[in-house]
View 1 (cartoon, rainbow, N blue to C red):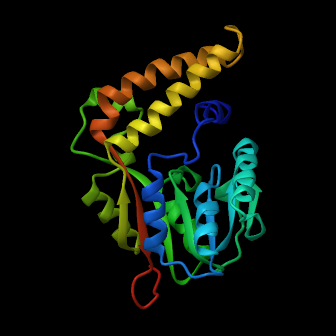
View 2 (cartoon, rainbow, N blue to C red; view 1 turned 90 degrees about the vertical axis):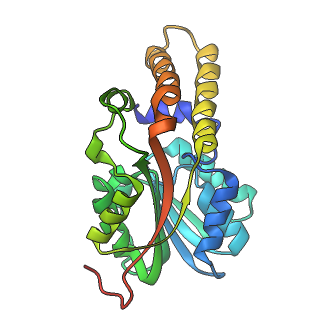
Length: 253
C-alpha cells in the first residue's frame, strides 16, 4: 500500500502494529526507564509509545515519521497526555534522520525495518544514536514453521525476508548485538490490528464516492487482506518487539 492508503487503513489505530496496549506498557517496564531519560523512535507513527511512556515515566524524546497525518495525531496525543513539552515529532525519512550520536537511552524502530533496507541495516542506524549500555527495540515479524509457497505468495514475502524465532536470534548474533528480552504478539493481537483496518477501510469507502481515486485500491486491499490474514498470516507469521543491547564490554562488532 501507499502511504496514503496506510493513513486510511490505520485511521482508527493508536498503535500501528499488532501489539496490545498492555504489552506496550509491559515493554516500557522492561526498559526500566528513569525520569529524564531520552528515547528516539524511528518511524514513530502516531507516537503512542513515546506519549504513553513520557506520561508514565517522565522521559523525553524524538519521534520521526514520514506521515504528517500520523504526526498530527502524535502531537495531539502528546498534548492530551500532558507530555508535549518533553517530546518532539519530526517529519522526514526515518532512515535518513541524522540523530545526535550516542544521545539516547533507548532507540526504537517498531515494525518498520524497511527504513534501513532490512533488519541488519536498521539495527546499524539505531546503534549510532544509542548511549553506551542503552537499549534498542526492534519490532519485526518472524516465521512460524515453514509456510507453503502459496502462503508466501499470498502474504507477499519471500522466505528469506524473515526467519523463525531461533533464526531471528541467529541474525541478531551475526550483527553483534545481544537479545536480552522480547514481547511477542499473539493471534488476538494480529486479529485486532488487521480487523480494525478492515472496519476503518469499510467506513472510509462508505463515506466517499465509488469513483474516488483511492477507492478501487482500497477495495482490492480489503478483500485481499481479509482472505490472506485468515488463511495464512495469522498461522504463519508471528510478530514481536525484540530488546537488544551491545555485547557486555560495549564492543560493537
